[in-house]
Length: 232
Image: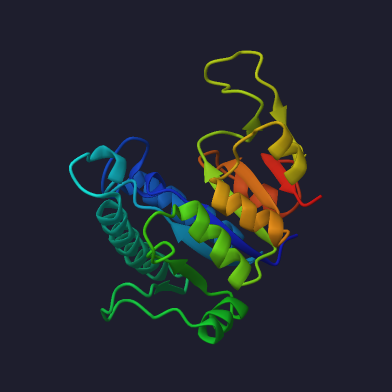
């Protein structure tokens, strides 16, 4: 059992695969899955913005500007997601340091810790607040700051493979990997900056298929789900 988790969600968790905006069935599924673990673990979420904006889709603006737009997108998702949690009966807070508007709370260690200790959900928006970094890196940083026991990287694939399982029928799934194994086998778990931080601060990572019902609860209670990447 993991007392405190940092869940890294893509924007597609709110919209459905390949879609934009917010999709009803996707949101209902997400709410149910988070509710299933809310009494089991303290939950912090880092949310992406792929349902709103993807900087790589535009080639006529600077990367720093595209990243800034993307960070604003994550702030939109954070406040929307926290409001949906609250309406569902799960106490939640949208936290960011890039927007000064009433629905948001500024990121402060002491206040965030108090929320988590009361099993209130913290939703981080705004990425790292700096351009040139992904939400993977934001997830790693926030996990270290809140002293999470586990980073859960929610994906559309049921774990980590030695090659793309959508292309190769003989792709091998790993149940467990060490950081050294992942590096030596050149297996990409997160972006390099995020992975380096997790290795340095010994934060285990669980990669799982978030879109298979019950996966996250089963993983939290100790069943073999997805792929664990563990400190050496």
